[in-house]
Image 1 (cartoon, rainbow, N blue to C red):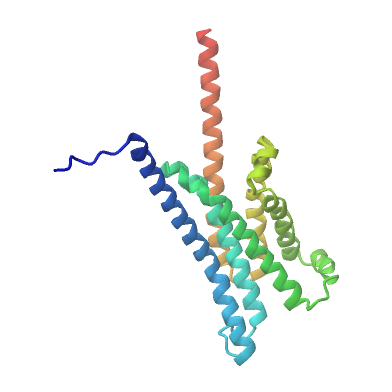
Image 2: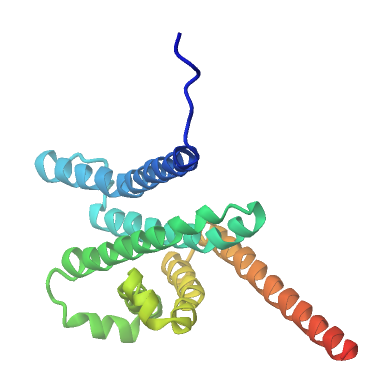
Length: 233
C-alpha cells in the first residue's frame, strides 16, 4: 500500500504564489475588458450611424461622441485618484497594481476625446485649435489637462519609474491638478445643468480632502516623533 503523498516545502510555497499570480492576471484582464467596453460600444454605434443613420447617438452624434469619450476620461481619472485612499482604507496593497493601468486608460479616452474634437468638430482645420483655446475657457483648461497628462503617460513605464526615482512621485502628483482642470472643463462646458459636473466636483473634493488630511496627520506624527526623540536625547 502506498504511503501518504508528501509535498515539498518549496512546492507548498510556490502554490499560493502561483494562485496569487493567476488571480492577478485574471483581475487585470477583467479591468482591461471593462475599461475598453465603452470604447467598443461607441465604435459599434458609430459604425451603425455611418451605415444606417440610427446608431443611437442622438440628434447630434458628434457632440454625443465627444461627450462620452470625455466623460469616460473623467470617470477613469476619478477612479485612478481613488485607488490610494481605497488602499489606505482596506489595507489591500494589490490595488496599487491597477492605478497605473487605469491612469493610462484615462489618458487613452482623453486623447480620443481631443481627437474627436479635432477631426469631427473642427473637421481638419486644426490650426483653429489655438484660436479656440484662446477664446473658450473650457477648451483652454481641457487642453491644459490633456497636456499635463502626456508626461504622466510617457513616464508610466517601469524603466521611467526607476530612472526618475523620487522625482517620479513628484511629477505624478500633477494628477490632482489635472483632476481639478478636468472638472472645470466639464463644468464650464455644460453652462446650465451643472448637476453632473457638480457630482464629479464633489467626488474630487472628497479625494483631495482625504489626501490633505493624511498629509497633515502624517506630518504631525513625524513632528511628534522628532520632538519625542529630541526630548529623550
